[in-house]
Length: 114
Length: 115
Image 1 (cartoon, rainbow over the protein chains, first blue to last red):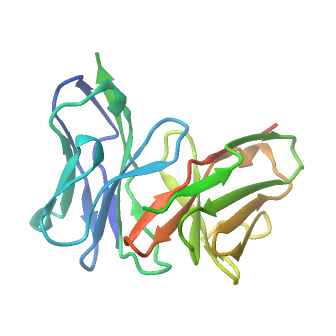
Image 2: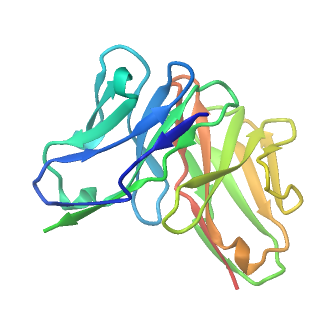
């Protein structure tokens, strides 16, 4: 079955510290992988995506993610977090066919300590 | 990427009334839009896939007569919550799939509170 697992419901890091949010997926074919961020009361904003090619992808706001096929993972990283990064982060996987569903993880809430 | 707008951003209504939420694709002709519902501190739940010019496809457990979806043009899809009740209070988000970038983009969401 297709699924996305974000093992950490909450993560707390200090401002300026590095960050890694974990994402594991189960998918039958080569997946399209995404990370979205959602601030309170807002919609989802695309951070980055991976389809093929270089397995280390750069996104907006200083985020990057690395696709590891052998581990079925697509972890999100940032070398130094800012207080404004506090939000909910969703990993998603999909085929991007016309009507096929994109599958979301349950999300990881990031808290930033001053 | 595609820009998606929603209107209204929030709405408060009395129980028993109907509420219409609009979703617009501002710079992209969207043949397919998606409607999601999100409960507090939870992930997104797909309600239905809205296809331009045809009937929407609803997910299992979503009442078609309760949540009416109309996708009359390539830039507009509407979700009408009919005879709303307090349990329908939620955050509703629409999304469109931009085939130019093979990416799904989301609207800002509509907060519905039914009293």
